[in-house]
Image 1 (cartoon, rainbow, N blue to C red):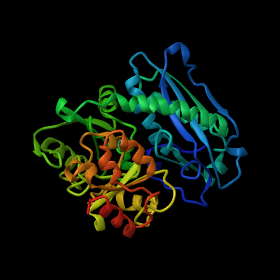
Image 2 (tube, helix red, strand yellow):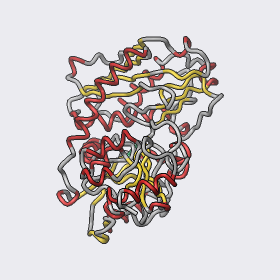
Image 3 (tube, rainbow, N blue to C red):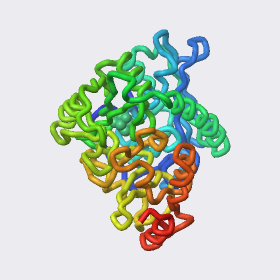
Image 4 (cartoon, rainbow, N blue to C red):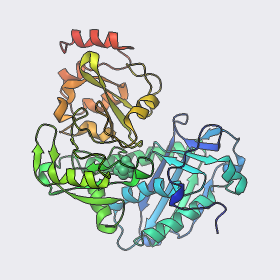
Amino acid sequence: MYVVDVGPQYEGERIRRGEYHVEFGGPEVPRKGELVTVRPAAEVEHDRITVTGPDLKDMPPDSAQPLFIKIDVAGEQLDKDLEAVVERRIHQYINYIEGAFHMGQRNEIWIRIHKNSVKKGLDSLAPIGRILIDLFTAELPVIEKMSVEFYTEPAKVKSLVESAMKVYRERDEKVLGLKEEDVDEFYGCVLCQSFAPTHVCIITPERVSLCGAINWFDGRAATKVDPEGAQFVVPKGQLIDEQNVSYDAVNEIVAARSMGESTVFSLHSALENPHTSCGCFEAIVFYIPEVDGFGIVNRDFVGPTVIGEPFSSLAGLASGGKQNAGYLGMGVQYLKSPKFLKGDGGYNRVAWLTSSLKEVAKEVAPAGVIAAIATEKDVQNVEDLVGFRQRAGRL
Ligand code: SF4
């Protein structure tokens, strides 16, 4: 018996400003995160739930707080490849809790706890740990032992996030070098249909999921361990559009899983039958007609983009599981894909990037192309961007 109700009926529940007792993470909190680690059975104390730092009942109402959720799991059939997949389910299972909302992943989590649920008794993070252990072990029997630790002290959260960033990076790097042509199947995910009912993620070796949490290897591991789960195998079939990269068998799966909402997905175009976006994307590609090019903004960028809209407004245009030509949610790692926006001209078509994304792009794009991309430090509006691109010989 839990202090609040639990079940899939609560997925998709929104908790607005003024309704939450506390929000953890989100744009106002610089350090937050969640990490699942597979460990040997002897190192995991099953059912251990701890809260280190102030708990829900100690926090002022309407405040934003740091949080790190550290989960250790063990099981004979569990291997490292499954860590990201298990981690992504934190999103699903916290959303099963009445009066709890979870958004994002990795070091970009955003959790809200409704005042009504706190009044009902959810005044500690510990019951959330209990619910997570019960749901994980019931729905993923490969998890034999599990512990959940919550940390809320800023300094501790900071150090845990710094360690986790190394793990996220290692996961991302694993897939570098593998090409779509090298594999026979891709993977799909519909975990976010609770928020965007017609959204389907297609994950290829050159296209990480837009939440950034699931790459091709993670998709493969997930389908092996839970074939009936939210991730599934997507046969490639025949390449029917080389420019934008579209496969016939992929399109059949997209049509079926989106309930007919989308029938053709270009895997590498933001303009021509673009991939849908739920709301969990790490970054948004947006078309800027004045320069016939794209801007790209990451979730933690504060302030207006070059077109005057902040991330949150653009997220409203990109999300919802519909194909929105000119808007595309993406994982930051997609910037490193050899097929990055291939159908639209790749980096040659990128006119504006936030300075943090430009640092990522520098690792892969030629120096001359990078020099022609403005950031918030170079231009503040579209008019200045036009001048910048003209001077760079791109207009
Ligand atoms: S964004 Fe895509 S891959 Fe990530 S959890 Fe949602 S549906 Fe799955």
